[in-house]
Length: 203
Image 1: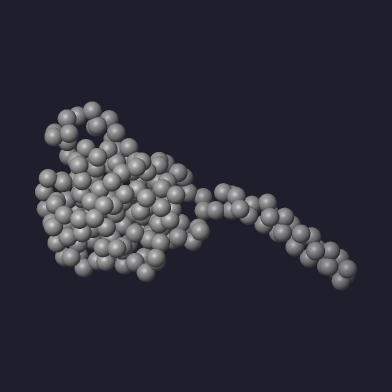
Image 2 (image 1 turned 30 degrees about the vertical axis):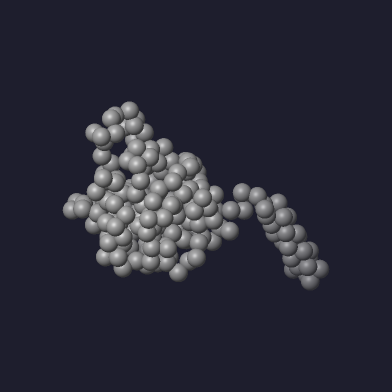
């Protein structure tokens, strides 16, 4: 190939790359491809320090959400062992957090959540534990995070009990992304970690 022909090839290659860059830059096509499966509705709960925690505090953060209760002897210890792995990997990221909701607010008071958080040895500015009204907590699990069947809302609240092994992933705009992740399965926790990393890179 002559030098002139090579120069033309290089020129058109650069032109093509530049075209696609300017075509997609600043659009959603330039961002991470991960389905939006739901949207976080407004809420106000109380954290382990007795302070309000609202949906506004999800904005500009990548957040992993779960439900548990402190006296659980079944799946919750395993779930939070796996969540601790996620915490350790991303705790150095300023725009990352974990939000754990109690599913037994009648038991998990603010002091109980504080004691539980301390027992895990985590930074509660990064891993937040919240309690609140049972109906509000359960509505969020079903209507926003898709961690339980919304049809269960028709039952009497005093007869309800959520015991789910699933995690949700929230982006900086309060959108539930990716899928519902099974926190008991190592390969799904690994997928969650990969998806968190993708969203953290997507500014």
